[in-house]
Image 1 (cartoon, helix red, strand yellow):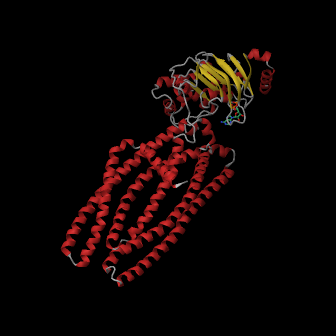
Image 2 (tube, rainbow, N blue to C red):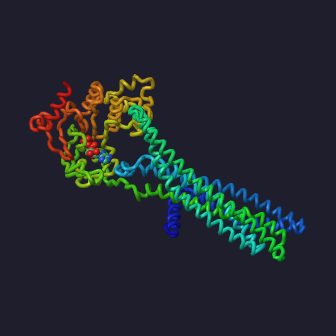
Image 3 (cartoon, rainbow, N blue to C red):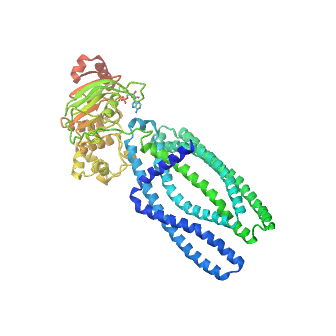
Length: 583
Ligand code: ADP
């Protein structure tokens, strides 16, 4: 990347980061004033200090006392200014971190599902936790180094006033060290970029480990999983080691250069003293400042390093927020509070990866309060129809209408606020049972929760628990059985009072009693809601008003159970197969 682009990028990123602390204008102004004062004092104090030493070597003790008094006053002011500069920069960094994290979390929820499908969760966790922290850090680091930087420039100026030749020596020394520091930063950043990618992958895999811990145990996959984890952790630690190796090697090198520059300084001083071009006192004074002057450089390169770090993190965070890489869901502006529950798919085509058509011209209409079932082989596209209706994905072609309105025109609440999907494995939040309801509807009353649970045939079970509705359900609802999770999801949908309920019916892995419980729960809802069921067992669809037969992304037939038995061979075959399984 060209230098100009880097500068533009940095300025752009700072501007974006500043936006997150826009309410902290007062703090920023105070921070700025404190830093200006520090810069002024930082430039004056070293000059006075040099003067102080000259007075001492000249034996002017009265003047020395006066200067010392002024320096004391100034140093105390410096301390106060530093205190306030730090305080306000911390407030600033805190606000930026807080607001950026909240915004990023919000934007994550807005990313198109299709883009989320492609990424591991590690990518997002790392950016949310680590990168946002690094963005905020720049405001803390810059504050601390900024004032030191100014002080040290003041010292350099003092050296210029005392002796021009030694000043030139310092400038040349600074340039030499700067050159090597630049090389180090370049190398370090290359490694760091790579390291962050590996860190993301490792976080993702650890996430898998934690979430899938039970399945890993049951699948007896601990060994192979550990092999993968071991590989990743070893790699990432090796990369970190290589990064510190770069620092170590360069430190060894620049350390020796510092020593060599010291030697040169003494050599130069001897020549200057013998030629009466500088006093011994001044050589001592300037030598005392050596550390701080060379520090100027380390600091400059450090500041550059921080900025590189900042830029890297900022681009990773802002590419999510600004949708440059991750597309955001787009909804229309039309709002309907309560829908009737009619909907229609008209010539809908869809594919997940543009290669394989998953929905191949779907057409169907459902009237409100109808119960319609979808039947077909696994992979036929049934769940995809549900996902499209809930606007988790957008059709490649064709339109979906709710109450006669194209869903493209509707806002998010009008669609998702009116549709619930109950999947085979619903996500239950690691909260109490009651909180699993309040998270979807903040103002829900206890009576409403109990009513929904009664309808979903879950109330009796909940009451048998020692803490009843205040029972914690564990991560992913781990303490609930598959059927109970589904019934809780049904109760959640009922409590949400959405008009359309999409139900990906339980698999045959659930026992009969649970199946019946869920059947009853659905039966309770019939004719009150528009219900769509993906049926894995034909016995559950017999009571539907209509059955749609899905095959290879198309609706190939429809009718009631009896009608289909008579007219559709494929349906009859599926039915007979199931009867055979039962007998
Ligand atoms: P069904 O519900 O009828 O079993 P699905 O709608 O789940 O079928 O899947 C239809 C096809 O789309 C399958 O080939 C499946 O592999 C694919 N598919 C489903 N979800 C995704 C996804 N998130 N990304 C890519 N392909 C998917």
